[in-house]
Amino acid sequence: MAITGLPPDTDADIARVSEALAMITPRWNVRILLALSGPPLRYSEIADRLSWLQNGQLHPKLRALCDAGLVQRTEHTSRHVTYGHTDRGAALLRVLPVIVTWAEEHLEKADRPLPAIEQIEDSLTLLTRRHAAAILWVLKSRAEVSGRALARIVMPSSDWTNIYPPLRQLVADGLVDTAGIGQPYRLSVAGDGLGPVFGALSAWSAGHPLTHAAQHPVWGHPGAVPAPKPWVSNHALPAPTASSAGRAGGATRPTWQNRDLFSHTATARPKAALPAGGPRR
Image (cartoon, rainbow, N blue to C red; front, side, top):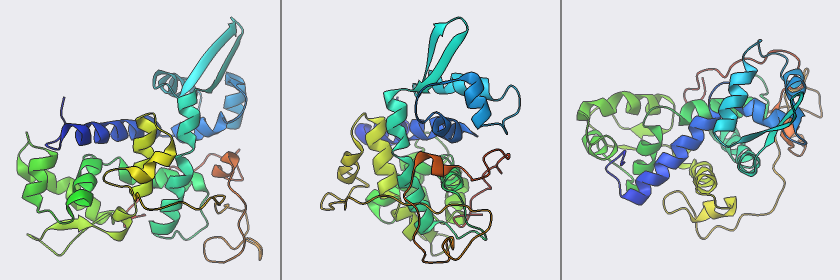
């Protein structure tokens, strides 16, 4: 069933990406997926890694991730059950550094060094706004579009004025620009920079290698040849030192590992991702 007035293949692409975002955006889902990096774990072992989750929170999250095909539950015996990534879940983890790279370049700088997991959670807050993916897709493919024209494309069966609440939110988030009331809308620099993120999510959701992201018909850059280099992330250290200056400094940062997405104080309950606006907070 079509969800927009876009061509069927584009409509299906947006739907797949929106579904992928819906799998990982719910609170703590990314942290659970990262906790499962490595050999399969028993429930108690996962709970130990996520000790800040309250009783009763982990089991429904694991069940939902199993239902989404990202986590596999294996019952060895009635008393020995383990959880681990499916191939699809393991492949999805490779999208996370792409999200953090975008966040470090385009999100508003925080007043403290942020661990990469918070960069991801803040970014997902922006990208899962209602109708956000479809609006961004249209603006990327058509450069400038009026609000009324956007409404006809994005929500053809709805009153056209319903386009303005999500548009205003995207403007507030810093992903869309406009010169004022009655003027057309266009992507901001941050919105246009989402190409690698949406390209990677599109490739993953279609079952393709992430190398296909550069060939995405809307968000790709077919002529670009990515340089093979390790992705790095800023750590959130308890106290920045001369060798770890966070965002503001130019010190060498460590090579990224899955475990680096967590705060160094993993036993403490993490702060929920704050509403990201402008495009952060």
